[in-house]
Image 1 (cartoon, rainbow, N blue to C red):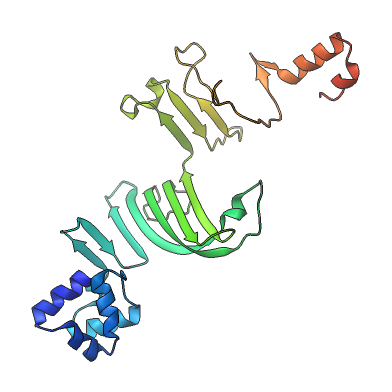
Image 2: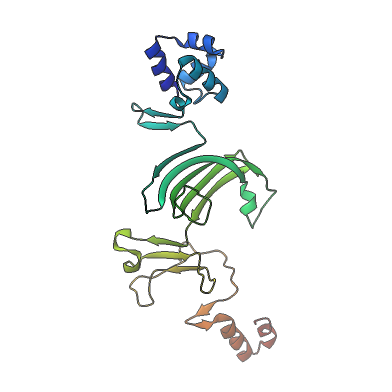
Length: 252
């Protein structure tokens, strides 16, 4: 923001001290802005500066700093968008909002939950031809960050997609590259939500969850199948055959 103010002052032959006097703001605010001790000013001060310099507030909503290679936005709904008739809108969006803290999403060790102000960075596309990053038409990533410490923290990444695929090489197409995983997050046929490898049973590649060096410590499941056979039935049959019918009764 200081670069914009400095440019306007030079164009008008005005000093920052005179600007502060005419705008009725603390000159230390401008000094802190120039020295990098603050990144922006209070909105009401920006309005006063715009009035004195006789420019639109739009002058201060975005700044292109070629020396630093930066584009700076000073609004709460900044975005880069591609809008093309007949295609979903694509965008990178920077916003703010009230978000539930992380405890609202924890199942283990959850403490009290509250809501705090957070920054929201979104990258994606919306087939409803808008830039809504929170409706069913959005496919992409939402990154939430806010709060301070302890239970008062928002630190979350959200992936929104009916099908999420992780592949070795996207250029070959997921269907042609067996190396990777697929999350099927929506299936209107049988309401199953599936996490599966892209490999087929006869593939040269193996799908592993954990390794002998980095094993999974605990695994909680309702059902397990080995080669199409239900593991519970197999264990129950073994228990009955070796004379542990009492233990077998616990297996349904």
